Image (cartoon, rainbow, N blue to C red; front, side, top):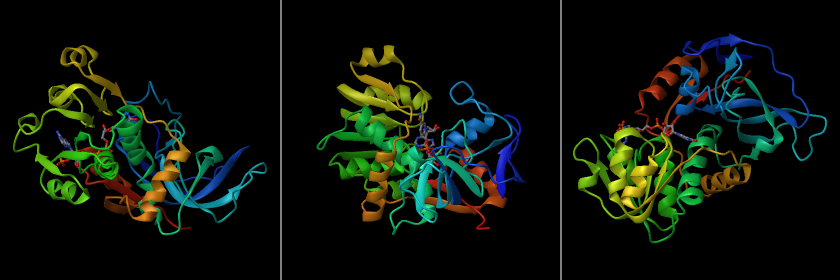
Length: 309
Ligand SMILES: NC(=O)c1ccc[n+]([C@@H]2O[C@H](COP(=O)([O-])OP(=O)(O)OC[C@H]3O[C@@H](n4cnc5c(N)ncnc54)[C@H](OP(=O)(O)O)[C@@H]3O)[C@@H](O)[C@H]2O)c1
């Protein structure tokens, strides 16, 4: 089978022919149809995540996958060969950018019939993080206002829809065609961050979802109401700044949760949550996919299509 792997940090991903991995207790083998990229993949490749997710080389990249079960472990019940599934593998294991991937059954979610493999592969990390940040960390409620940075990005595109569906007023930042994309996804107001500082256009929000970090994160404290919440996914927020502004702040560290992923996929199946797909790229051009992901300017999700053999 083909895999996209690296043999050292900072090495370019190489497409290699590798043996199909063996499954162990509590695992299934998934024939991967599509893999969704995340900034996490390029950060792992660059070695930036070593302290959180150490890897063993050669490392097969990718965590978010959709496909069909090709083999089930002897002790596995409730899953059959041919079942359509979605999963997020542990980042230290990776393995999603491959013809077959080993997945523990605890990570498996059934893929509802109307959802394509390409859509499904875009969901686990980005939508899971958006949900976790908005509702589990920041406790966003109906009637509140949320500022969502990078509304046309992977996390932001889901966050706009999830916040809106929960009855919140949504303000997003974006630029270029991202402004119209964020509007179409349901943002009530979109600020072109290249045309004006967002803090000139927004104040007293209940929740900020910051997926940018740095200067954007620092300036975000000032647009929150007292007691508001800044949920950050890119870099840990400054506690001293949070206290100085009388707000709360927390870093969102994605925790995989199969039940949460199942609920998100039900929303995709029902048509209440859409997956913004930037592009679908075949595995043999995964270098292009990685370069675009690393650019930081994706419009939603970059999906790598696997060979079907
Ligand atoms: N902690 C965790 O567990 C966790 C989980 C998921 C993601 N993350 C992190 O969260 C961050 C975002 O992830 P993602 O998947 O959403 O990334 P992404 O899809 O690569 O985000 C790309 C988007 O960011 C926008 N953008 C770039 N600079 C901006 C700025 N200054 N203001 C507003 N928008 C800007 C781009 O719009 P333009 O092209 O218009 O600039 C683009 O649409 C990454 O750092 C990722 O590693 C962390």
